[in-house]
Image 1 (cartoon, rainbow, N blue to C red):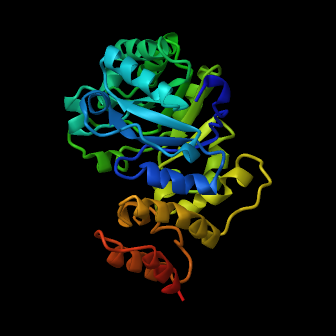
Image 2 (image 1 turned 180 degrees about the vertical axis):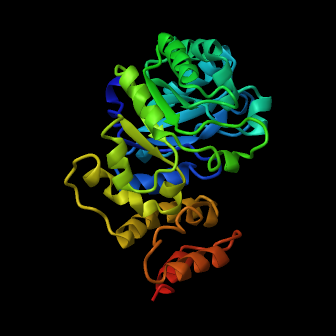
Length: 326
């Protein structure tokens, strides 16, 4: 896709990169409900792209606007991957400076890079030198004992000087030792005011907030202070939340699809996947939350979970799961 034909990126609402969750099937599903939200891939390491045997950059054209999140700390490798991403038509490249897992730390990327702002700046500059799409950074408000506001502003200032104009800030610090990734999403306290202050002190930057957001009303509150909101687990576990993003947050008057409309629009995609030899559960595992909060939602989840595995299940499983709701 040429730069002139790339979609304009609306950063008001985005879905966080989530390992094992935000794959191309989930992203297609999410895009059905909102034309405006910005989608992110799962984090992909530079090593996987450069040395792996699979196609780690595959996506559906319908997913645009779409950002690739990269994990890495070698500027040359990141530049190689950013160039490949741009050539494949991605609309943004995002550097992960927020993941706290041991595996990520051992690879010297993720949240531990907050301690090396000069290296992050070098990585950003290397990627910007070879692409004409935005290079952005997703980070935390601090790590371990380095959690002062001054530490955060020094990091942002250093990386901005390398040309980064867009930051997504997870409003928790990360403990690099002693907490699991799951605990790091829940135990360190949220500090939304710190991110608001960052926007006040860097008004020229586009700053989105991430962490603990569960409703569009909460999004609207954050948008009074910031440029965008990134939602993670809630957008996955309660995906129908996305159906009103365009109308409530982006000012569009397009009709809001019903849950059944979303399901019907997924049927051709599922059938195409099955016809190509794919497994039903590759897609339906992302759809179990579609009817969350509705009568019969438990029957929907149970039927898909119990009957959607293996190589045999066909599209009839989806229809029967909907019938099971009564």
